[in-house]
Structures are given as structure tokens and as C-alpha cells.
Length: 243
Image (tube, rainbow, N blue to C red; front, side, top):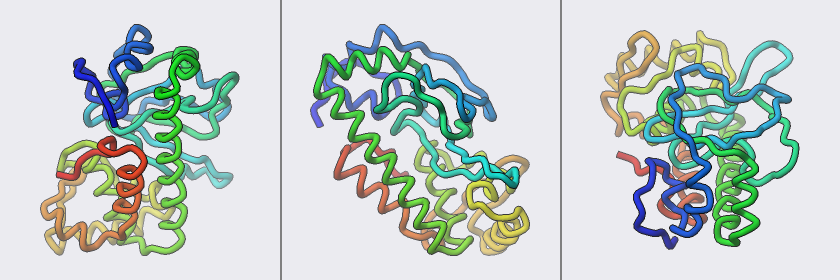
């Protein structure tokens, strides 16, 4: 993918834009710091801003169920954006969009993103390709939940968070992992106890510290690799490098 040499923020998708395309939205970008747990959108909210997580910042999509549980479907980090990626006009949010790991984000009005798409076919194509990659993540998550064990999915989500933050300390609690997996807290607690006993990770209040990433990979399914492979075919260089 052709990109320019102008200095860009620590957003992989923005860095993938050509200089002339980046200049279309650069004046409309504003930087802010978000804390863990911040709510960006609730179901039904009008999506007026697009958010670009920077560096290790993580944002998650959660679907609210009738029994009161919020099940996480997708994590988005520096490889992507949330809110109004391909649509235009009135955009009601379908699910909760929250900050999973606090940090810096850039935001831009949906109207400025739409105007850039109308001015540049290459800008429009990049965001359409990202939307395809985001959809692939959702498809893979659905298949993963149906096919793979709780242990495999636990390892997968921890590795996905590590890829996006670039850190071995992952800001996930037992409750949040249970939400990611759509299971009760007792199930994730048993898996984490097993991982601790095997020397794969340690736990602290509100976070997990991975001690043996190779061992975690061995316990994971291959869903992260499938998503990475699709990103590499559709938007090479945008998915975060695995350390």
C-alpha cells in the first residue's frame, strides 16, 4: 500500500493513508485522552464522531443481552477505527462501544470522513477495506465461540490484547474475560488458575501478566492468525505486529 512520508500519529490505519488523503482529514482530527471504562456510544446513540485509538489504547464492542450480560465481540486498537466507518447520514449505534484500555485517541466528525470519501477514491477504498477486515473479525469471533473451548478462547483474547497494546501486561479482569467469552466468571477463573499453575501468566488486581507467550499461543485456537491473515491480504501492514 502506497503511503507518504509525513509524520503520522500512532494509528496504523491513518499511517496507511497517502499524504494527499491524510491531508483531507488532518485539519478535522482532535486528540483527547480517554480512561478505561469510558463509554463512547450506547445503543441508539447517533454516531457523530469516528475514533482512532492510538498506541496501546483499546476499544471494545459489547452486545447487550436480555439477561443483562454484555458480551464482547471485537477489540479495536491502533489498527482501526470505530464509529461511522462506511455509512453516512443518521447512524444509530447498535451496541455499546467502550474504552477497554485507556489512552490517547484521535476523533473526527463523521461528516469530515464522508467528505474525504467523496473527494478521494483511494481514501474511500481504504476505509471500505478496513470495514471488510472488521467484519472478518466478527465472523471469526462467531465461529470461535461456537467451536473452541473456553481455554482456547481465553488464550486467544489475551493474545489479541497483547498484539494491540504491545504489552505483556493485559488490562483484563476475570469479569471482563467472562464477558469476552460469554460465560460465567467461575469458568474463566478456573482457566486462569490453570494458566497460573502452569507458569503461563500471573494475575494482579485488574490485569494479567503473561510470562510465557509461546505457551499461551500453544493453548490458543488459530482465530487470531486467521484474522491477521485476512488483514495482510486486504490491508497489508495495518494489523499490529506480534512481538
